[in-house]
Image 1 (cartoon, rainbow, N blue to C red):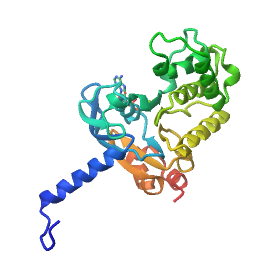
Image 2 (cartoon, protein in one colour; image 1 turned 120 degrees about the vertical axis):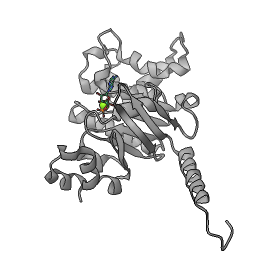
Image 3 (cartoon, helix red, strand yellow; image 1 turned 60 degrees about the vertical axis):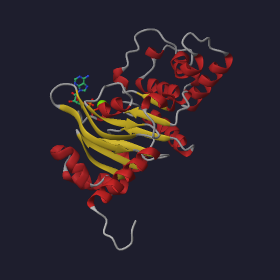
Image 4 (cartoon, rainbow, N blue to C red; image 1 turned 90 degrees about the vertical axis):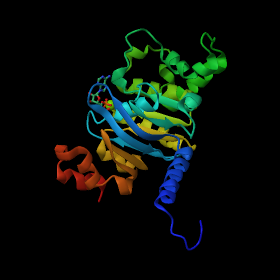
Length: 272
Ligand code: ADP
Ligand code: MG
């Protein structure tokens, strides 16, 4: 920078762009200008997101706000109309092995017979290869992941016979088996019992302690302050993003939910 010379607008905007790119390069998940549409109306519109490394971030917004779509686009499960994303500064295609995803439970149909241990072994498919035979070491690893979610005793049970909360723990065990750096979970606490919720949050916190990044679509506003470092509020467009204390406020919730939340609730939720 030359002393005594005012920076031109062009310099300033170039520096801002470079700053954005530097942020994206360090971020486990950075999204720029993402628009996704299933029909005429976009489900996600022009969204930027920069996930902080080594922290827990909640994606929050009303039903139909585009939360699941945002994750699916980040994972390449749905194709965007426009926009791009990077995983730890690199294209998704090069980084798949570093991401573990737990989809919304309702979207998985477990009518066909599959044992719990086999569900977790699916998380090891990169080590196993397509027709790979499971070795004792793979089974031991799968079992230790089940242990971490308190489901080791259910290893031989059929997944379809478990309760919703138990299934959710098994899907988390599968994600753990992948040994990823970025964990994306879509409403992991929806419809689970209190014991499962405690088990899941404690596993997620241990992942964060190990330096992993955790992003959770979350529907329970009452636990946000307690569970998360950051929030990303969305209602088709990004409403707010940042540390809970700054981005999870009456004003941002009002902006995301509109009239769907009573004002009396808001004070209490944000503890402010
Ligand atoms: P959220 O997870 O926040 O509830 P979604 O991302 O599931 O929201 O959905 C966003 C919008 O896109 C909603 O209006 C929903 O009805 C629509 N949508 C989601 N998935 C599909 C799909 N496969 N086909 C058509 N519309 C969809
Ligand atoms: Mg959803």
